[in-house]
Image (cartoon, rainbow, N blue to C red; front, top):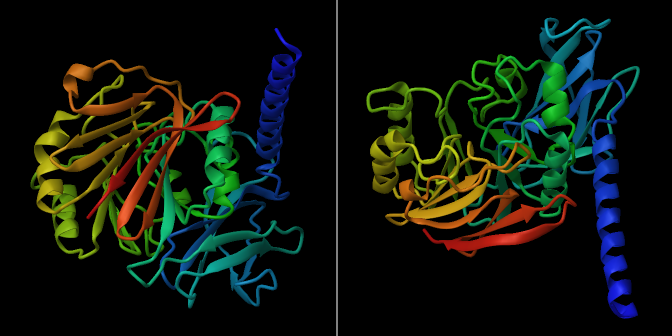
Length: 389
């Protein structure tokens, strides 16, 4: 082997080592706001308001200082919503604290930090929703991060460089429905902190957190209300809708009626649906026949163009009757191979890989790019597609 090849190989190895080291340091420091069980993060963002949540010890609330610069200039008091006492023995009780920021400007980056007499968080940011339906922005999609926080951190580190306005999470945030606060912190909040500190995570229920009371405490529906089973919101030209696919969605059910009304009553040019279970897939779990029978006709009737899901731990893209169906369940859980291709013969791309999806909304189209993330945290393109109204 020539000296040039040896030198290039060493350079690649050193580069990969530095990437892994950077991800490790980022992950270790992710929850480094001292005094917070879970550092502050944003929920329920719209054009003029946002909700800030955090977990604090000892019944301490705190104050959110916020503004368009790090000089802040405005403040809002935190209010304890819930005391967590039943997850494991501890010297102090942890409080879920919430405050709502009102009177914000549309399509504006805001800075905020939580301050109390003993400590304060680092500066964090979020972007308010645009009032203009022609706005250009990027959002990300991924899911099924449960079980492996190191793999999850690698996905987040690779995704963060795309600076998303929001993130759609397709569910399975934690391993079990009875996962307590410590598990939520280790499996989700710490590895995801690099993105949580600067954008809104919009989460739908997976089967692994179904019935977990912490889900509706940690995540808020648009408008700041507690998440029930379903909700929707607008972001620029995109209308986003989700339901709880663990629950009844057959015709006549509450969720079906919501979905029918919601999709019919929006005029946004792009309609995006996301839920946990895939309508079409050829991974370990495969397609959901009931979703194909009952939900696909609704999607077709109302010109839904893009449908995201998780549940299968892979990446897959399928097109059926003009609708693009994407599975992105490679956020950290053990990966799934392609098992059921006969049940999804329309599958176009399948990758057994940790992954996330980047969607750029611009110039009347949505440009979808799927990224695979390897064990060194290096992201490479897995797939690309253009979605038109």
